[in-house]
Length: 281
Image (cartoon, rainbow, N blue to C red):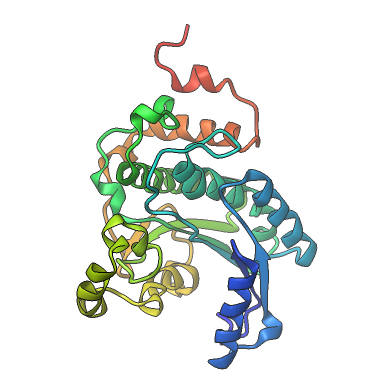
């Protein structure tokens, strides 16, 4: 993006690591003047809102956003200060807050703004999705929590696409699977905690898995390709539209998720208990 002349705002949990990333990019020929680092911790709604305010202070328009922050594995169940299960908030709730809060900037761009949510094929494995239990310890499993958060991302994409089309026709939203990438995110898995295992797996990971550059291709395709002009509410893998988990086709579940999400992000007031508890009276 920077090579193409774009101004890039990079959201980083650690400003120091973000600056190191900028230094590396400059060595490859990128322009430091068009690379901006902003701190963002998606496990904190306060941090997300501070990031949004700071970004709006730097620009009043965006051509596109790629929402790719995520956590794959945590060793134990825990809640954030906002009261959500950690993986659920980082991967889904905060992603929705960013998506919805940055819409006004996308609607002001010269063309059609694009939202790209980096999801995962891990959503396909999920066969149960209970919003009433999503933050509860008895419902928690790190692998399933990750898959459910990715399923929810795709549900949000599919639900919001026709709504955005009715609102302005100036913003599209799509989700994608970047592939299995040999990055620190993968190394969160327990198997990589053993240094001997890491050494044994290193050549296989290098050969079979994508590097970060390869993993960026499908998100960039969704963000930039003229082939996707006007395309919205779809899911892509290897730069092709692919099928999704059958649960995504459940319109009632998607609508319930949307209303829950807006309430969780304090974007609109709903009686969440009534919406997501089938036993509510």
